[in-house]
Length: 314
Ligand SMILES: [Zn+2]
Image 1 (cartoon, rainbow, N blue to C red):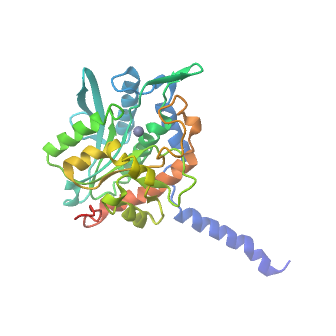
Image 2 (tube, protein in one colour):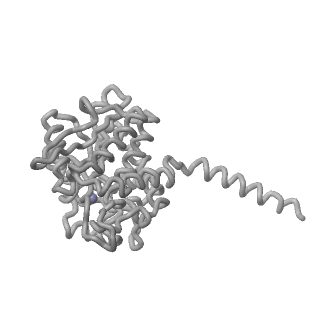
Image 3 (cartoon, rainbow, N blue to C red):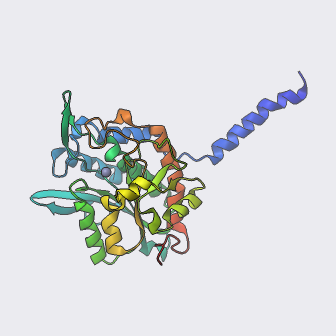
């Protein structure tokens, strides 16, 4: 064999090592699967606000915060609200920024952890597990928070919010947005994650941003991540999904870019609010790929010297 041929496997090995070093995997598909599988298990009975099942979900989220040294933003992790006679609670953690000035500016990453409880029976199944909606977004936010809490590389502070009462009409986020507005916090932007568990097959981006035209958030996320990670969904625009998730009341209260990032605009998932919205329908490699590209974008959002994400009318 010619000597020159011997060099080929060597070059391949070097290439592989370089690829491994530069391709960052912050979270794994397996980690996302473990968290999502618990939240979407039958034991939690569809996580309806006010139920025993959602109490278990809340306890689980609090334990994740505690284990990762994520501090409560209020006296406890729970931010209580009333929905009629029902007691609801958002779970709110805080990862303080490391810059003396910028730490006063807050970036919220959020997802609703509640779901609808029981739904129309199919066979003998009547539990709406809400794996995609929104155990997937909750898992993504928990694992991103775990990363940022460990690295402590964020200059701005990160508020980590898992909302309840979303399915009852954004009750929890409406309450928290008003509370934070009264406290006059310096909110830079909010990224809310909804239904990220299945990939699109017909798009040139991974996720859409609700209220796409409202701000330059999508362009900035793509610039910061180095991928075409986000884009515009016509269906989202037609159905006004911008007003249908927990970002909306934050936008209303603060008039800053508060938007939802999602991989399902109801065109690519048949099990919305259906008892078959279960973990076996989700693609955890897709979820990991999405989260691993989103983390560097959030990191940059937390660390730019000025607030670069802006409403388009500013
Ligand atoms: Zn949802």
